[in-house]
Image 1 (tube, rainbow over the protein chains, first blue to last red):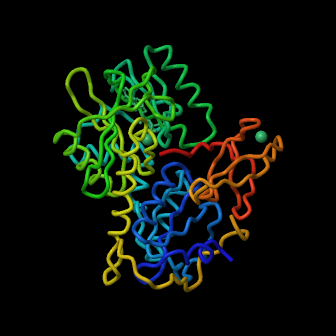
Image 2: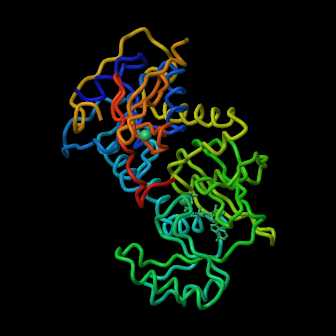
Image 3: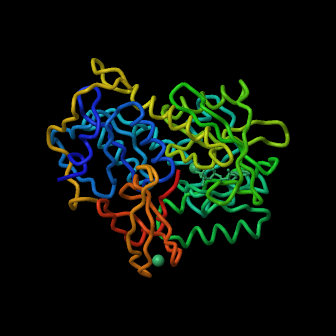
Length: 326
Length: 62
Ligand SMILES: Nc1ncnc2c1ncn2[C@@H]1O[C@H](COP(=O)(O)OP(=O)(O)OP(=O)(O)O)[C@@H](O)[C@H]1O
Ligand SMILES: [Mg+2]
Ligand SMILES: [Zn+2]
């Protein structure tokens, strides 16, 4: 049988249906989330996103709600779409995931909501790339439209570098990679700010300081606590709302000319970095995320975190999962 | 030894070394082989089975 039956009977709450934690990998973050759900007496079933398949129109799987922790952008969107089609509350929503995972879309949405963003230009093909770079000025940064972990970011200092990068873009196979997303190079104190948001609460803020201008934790940046000022909180909450809300990582850049800019919003937040030297921060994030997911419970169900004696049941067909024990 | 710290051992598919795992190990968790440092994915629990972890793909990330 599927995982659903195997782990659905661990603990009981509400109507007994478990919360689905859908993930590609159980990382540090997923471990903390599992613990947070279990501390609330909630049954959780871990679903490997690579094993999901469903028939359109079938009855919904017996999940009370879903926490989408897929690490792969393509599957992350499909997981939320699938849950929404089945009427299962899911964090984050498909529309939030879609906006966050496309840098053009997110910048447009953030700007439209009146948020300060770096000067950004888009070209629909490498042939128009030099024009886009002229619009933002040099030095500039070119980013893949759906990249993450700082991969594929190019700093363009002069016209020679521009020509080389645009020629390389031209040679890439996928049409997505032909899109040019260009930004002014924002001079920062070699760090950025990550504000973690859960619903309408800014949970915490950290500085990420790197040796390199690309300050991603995935690239070895160090994190340190950043005071969550009212200005940061306000910007982060407005940015989160602009992309559709949910469980989000809002990344901000402090420009040396005094601007505080929203760089992007991430829908698959990692918070291992927030735990370095301070386990309690990562713990608090997991708690806030679990509370947010449970607060999305449909009306009329037992309140989140309320432990009942009843044994969890699983009912109804689930989307089938390849193999016995993925 | 408490339940929390109890470990299980499983063989690395690459070098055969016995890799120690925490009792609360979950399917899809990634562990590093103590013998050859390769990344391994937990593909089953009870008993634990390890396989080479998939390569990071282009659309992975936050
Ligand atoms: N316009 C810019 N000017 C200066 N530095 C930048 C700019 N854009 C990004 N950076 C630096 O590069 C890092 C990664 O950028 P960005 O977040 O846009 O890429 P990403 O691949 O989506 O990363 P992630 O999703 O992991 O946050 C930022 O944290 C920041 O340090
Ligand atoms: Mg990103
Ligand atoms: Zn090994």
